[in-house]
Amino acid sequence: MTGFGRAKEDRPTPPQVYGWRPYMAAIIISLGVMAYGYDSSFIGQTLASKAFKRDFGFNTMTKAQQNNHLDSAGGFFGALFMLPALELLGRKRTVIISDVIFIIGSILCTVPTHQLGLIYAGRLLTGLGVGGIAAVCPTYISEIAPPAIRGRLTGFFESSYQIGAVIGFWINYGIVHNMDAASSNAWRIPMGVQLVPAGLLAIGIPFLRESPMWLLKKGRNEDALKVLSYYRNLPESHEYIAQDVHFMQGQVEQERSLTGSAQPTFINFLRATLREATTKGMWNRFVLVFLMFMWQAWSGAAAINYYSPTIFTSIGLTDTTLWTGVYGIIKAVGSIIFFTFFIDKFGRKWPWIVSSLACAGCQYYLAGYIAIGKPTAGVQQSAGTIAGGKAATAAIMLFGGAWSFGANGLPWIIASEIFPSSLRSISGPWAGMSVWLWTFVVTKALPSMYTSLGYGVYIFFATMLILASIYAFFFIHETKGLRMDQMDGIFGLKRPEYAYDDGGKVMEDSYSADKPRGATRVEAV
Image (cartoon, rainbow, N blue to C red):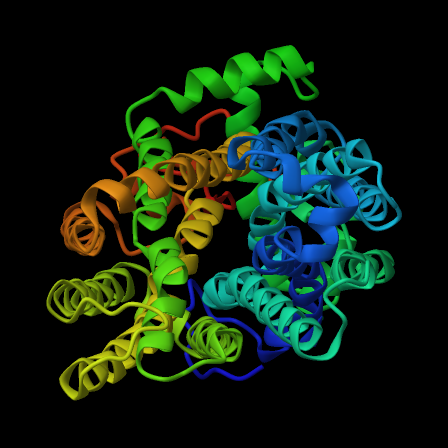
């Protein structure tokens, strides 16, 4: 847990703060996202298997009947429904609720024999579960992480997703090559494996502590002090812990000034947060998150997944499942390396720009190759086309590495760190709803785009990546290692600076130019 790749510290920090406990907590919380990544990679192959189609009557259904998008709907509404839980029950309990919902859904997907209704119910519940997990996990990790390694710890979210996706790829590979395609186990086993990461999360939950920020919001100051002492590996009396408490209490006091109550009702909380969310310097953060997920969805990653088997086959790589798995490994390794070692060194803005430009170059090449070479699966290709196909395969692999080595997980990290405590119970669900909305839109649009655009679809996605990099240059601010008062400054929000007494209360003359001797002047994180 070294200083390699750390952001600049916001203040002198004892080395104990970077101990194993925040890392352990971030890894446990991210296990829920591993289930999300696994689900995204295994489900297409599983639903298309001969045994599944036979057992549930998919052979007699149209494509529209098969693609009911219950998981996308579940993800969207799962993120939305977790808003009251995040505020009223806390981060830890929200993780528990989401995990239980996902486990029930996974069981319903695994046990049926011919009951399609159970499959639909299970897919809806697993969607609700991962929607809730995605809404809470980045916020939860961000609130327990020291600022200098916040990007690294929150980045475990994306790394865990990619690891889950790799597991899904290789389980499919093992089943395709080693199991009778007519056996019901060919779909039941991958459905059941969903329970593994969700079960590991359930085992790890007792080792987690509630978010100290949420505890302070609920007036549980002693509990918050104990949690901070635990995660920072410092005694409760340590000055660093006292500073953390003061910083957080500053945010809590500002939130209470908006709601007008120490313990507001949920309706009052919603009114206050909606009012704050529309103020100058705050609404643009919600727009930023929404647009970042839009750029991410229109990156062309889904298009690469769609056409890569054809390119692999055209150059003689007959085992497309194997090479799809290799592509998944490259994405996972890229994510792990970047988000573990470099995210807090290189930041957020420039990795997004460089990653987008590199991926755009890959897609422009793919468009040119498909337009000129016209590769077709199962058809003998010329030597020139095969050579171009090898370069296209390299472009696909480079795309996977470059996209994961930067932009792919950055929207989640930025969404988790740019909002004050008063808005995090709605910013997490907002991020989750944004990603599922854009995923649904792109999924629905892709088939007709391929029909009408052909190779032009890659020109479209590459151009979107160029536009995303331009957008990032002008509108994505560098947020690595920043406290919340510094975030407010770069987003154009001006808050009053407060002075606090030893109890963490705002002093009456906080606004005076000359602070009284003995007052503690702090800025919120």
